[in-house]
Image (cartoon, rainbow, N blue to C red):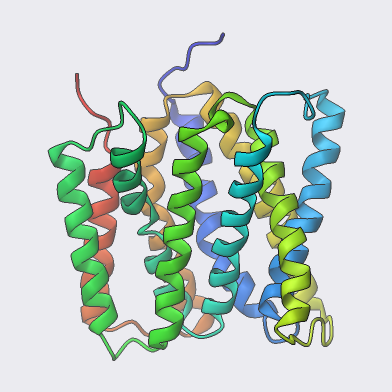
Length: 294
């Protein structure tokens, strides 16, 4: 088994690029939602992304169908992943990109709480506890801020998405999914979520694909190829080579990129209170993910 090493400049550079990619994701969603319904858009992202990941796994010779007790937790992880992205896609249509990305990235703090209660050996230290409290205080401040645009429902969907993201992470860490390849875990999430989203889109009466203009096509291509395929595989590759704690501390960059892209490209105008709230959430993420000194 390869021993994980501390990341160097190249790994740090790739991590910053991934955070920028993930920060732009909500912009791509909002650009496409005018022509493709939110849940249908999420289903297309997962379904076509799954095809690319499966083709890559076959090319690499990665085993996907062994008896490893991962089926039941894998199906549940896929369902939770699907619900996460339903709330992201529906929520970003009802709030601003800046607000959605900040609410969504409270997930690491919810994850720390879940790991503390459900995974042995993942006890929360004082620094992580302080990070959780700081992020939650920022969350409350962002919720009560009425000058930054968005809606209460859209903001609430962002928090629900964060909860489902955290629940997926805890499930992966606490079950047989922790012992299978990251590619197989990703396929569970993409395949099951697509299987849920397409009928759900029909059941709630979405219009589906109204038109497919060039900007919408490229926004969808970005979500499917760059995010669901390339960025996730790059992230899992980093996790197999480098110490995860040194990489996770960079996750605070994603909401910063998201807020910046929202202001630059979508005309978001966050208030001073929202900037303070976002800074508190980012500070909480940093505290939660700082490596523990032994």
